[in-house]
Length: 158
View 1 (cartoon, helix red, strand yellow):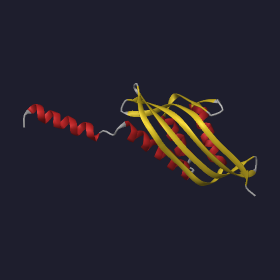
View 2 (cartoon, one colour):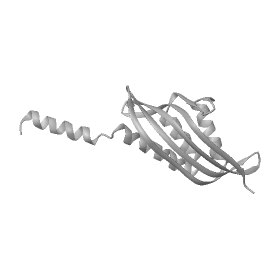
View 3 (tube, one colour):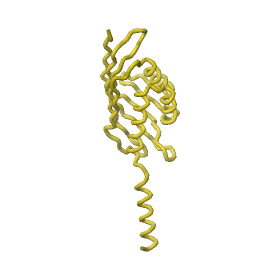
View 4 (cartoon, one colour):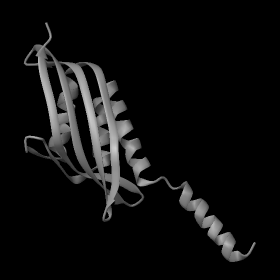
């Protein structure tokens, strides 16, 4: 084996051992969902701070805009209001390169018992989001989330 072909083989081995952005991003969503299912607000706070850029921006389906801190506060409040998670799924439908970023289309479904103003409800929420991830060093960070579709229903839990 010549030095050139050995170097090529080593390069192929090194490249093949580096996870693709899609795999890294999908693993981050899996971790997010697992934390949400456990109701661990401390871990969720750390996940958001560790995975969302400081300048992260979230736009809801109703065009309400949140900063990273506003998004974090909203998620943590939702978790505090949830007395029981019945179902929570998050599916990565697509991840594709857009320039130097990765665009991910995420479908999520949530059903749970929530308490709002001391009243109990069953909340069902289905949404689709488009997320933009950017590479920071060797890691991927969430730069932006836009909710493109939402179907939310709130039923009294008698």
